[in-house]
Image 1 (cartoon, rainbow, N blue to C red):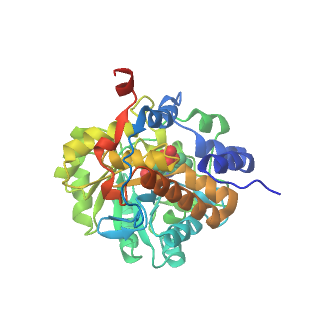
Image 2 (spheres, protein in one colour):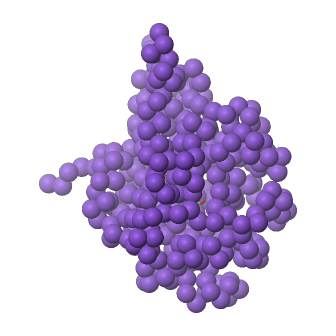
Image 3 (cartoon, rainbow, N blue to C red):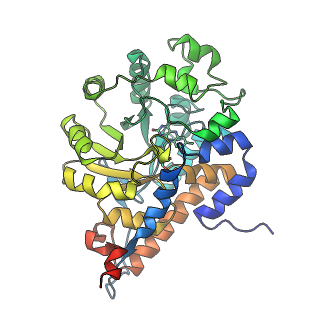
Length: 368
Ligand SMILES: Cc1cc2nc3c(=O)[nH]c(=O)nc-3n(C[C@H](O)[C@H](O)[C@H](O)COP(=O)(O)O)c2cc1C
C-alpha cells in the first residue's frame, strides 16, 4: 500500500521523486548560495509558542477576511509560474482547489493557463492577479484589463523583480519552458511578437530580462493605481521604509516576501522582516507574508507577529505534482488542520485571539 502523505514535507519528498529534473530545479531553487532559502525555514524555529490553557475551545473557527472577502483560513495560494509542469491542468487545478477550500488563489502572470481559463475553471472563486510592470506598459495594462473583465478581485504588483534573480540551478540546467507548454497570458494578438511567437521555450533569464523594466519606481505604482479600480497589493516588501512608501502610494495591502528566496540572496527571512513592517503600518492596511511556511505552527507564529494572511508557493506545487487538484486541496486542508490544532492547544478560538504575546524568541529562555 502506498504510504499516506500527511504533511507538506511528505508531499515535497514525493514530488522530488516525480518531477522531471529541469522542472524540479526550477521549482525548488533559490538565488545564488541559497542562504536565504535555508533561512526562510530555519528562522521559523527561532520562535516558540506560549500556549494559554483552560479556555473554552468548544466553539472555534480558523475563518478570517482578506480585503473584505471571507476565507476559511488565513492561508492563501501565492503566485508561482508555470504550474502545468507540475500537473496537466496546472493553474486551473490549483484555483479549483483553493475555491473548494475557500481561500484566495493568486495567479502568476507567467501562468501556463490563461486568465480566462482560470476564471472559467473556478468561476465563483476569490482570485487575485499578479502582474509585473513591463517595459511596454501596454502589456501590463492589457493583462490588468483582462483580469478585471474575468472577475479577479485584486491586482498583486510584484515589486521585487525589476530583473530576474540568479538561480545557479536554472543556469546549469539551461532551464526553459518545455515546448508543449505556453505562457498563456502572452498569446493574444497585441502582445509583443517575441512573446507571441516563442512563448514556449521561454528563457527565465533572457526573456524576463528583456520584458522587465529596471527603471521601475514609485511613480509606476501611481500609474497602476490610475489604471485600475481594483485594490493593489504590493508583493516583495522587506523593510518598514518601503512599507510606508507603499501605504503612501495607496496600497490596500503590503505582502512581505523575498520571492521564495529567488531574488537577492542574503535578505532576511520573511518571518524576521514581518514585525518591523507590521509596526510601521500600524493597522493602516493589511499585511501578508510568505516564504518557507510548511506547517500550522509556522502560520500561527506569523499571525501572532501581525500577519493577516500567510501565503504558500512551493507547497502547492508539491501537492499538484503528487495528486493534481486533490493534492493542492490536501495541502491546504493539512495546513488548516495543523493551524486549528495549534490554536486549540494554545487557547485560541479565533484568529483574533492569536496575540503578539503568544510567541517569543528562543533567546528569552536562555536569559532566564
Ligand atoms: C517556482 C516558483 C515560481 C514563482 N513565480 C512567481 C511569479 O511568477 N510571480 C511572483 O510574484 N512570485 C513568484 N514566485 C514567488 C512566490 O509567489 C512566493 O513569494 C514564494 O514561493 C513563497 O515562498 P515558498 O515557496 O517557500 O512558499 C515564485 C516562486 C516559485 C517557487
